[in-house]
Image (cartoon, rainbow, N blue to C red; front, side):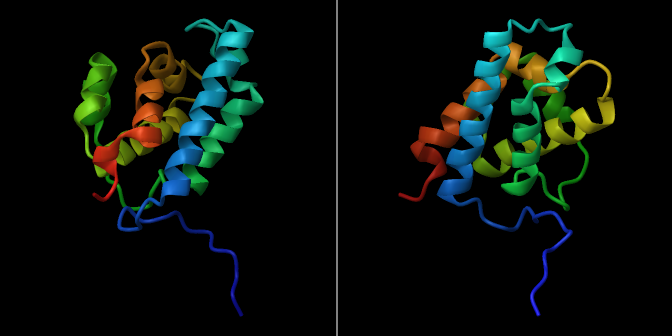
Length: 141
């Protein structure tokens, strides 16, 4: 009998087109909600209450962007935080790793300042969404 698995995806599982597009859509929904609610960088309590926040967090896990076998690594997270444009040249596995690290760090930081909100305000997540939606370098030729 087949059962629902309690385990996260592995980084060895491929990211399908539908997963990439859906993750991008969840990021877009979250960005729009933040703009609509005029949430500032220090307004993390209101940010955490957005339904789109929960959808985006849960989606990252459900869509295989948070994996059980990606080791902790603050270097990539810190580099992209300082220079979001670095996302332009990352491979799909590196983009997945960045999103994984961001989501896991967010869980550890909660209820403090939100790293996801900071990434939105810096334009990093919007850039990641754009790449997931339409960057041909992430797709087979």
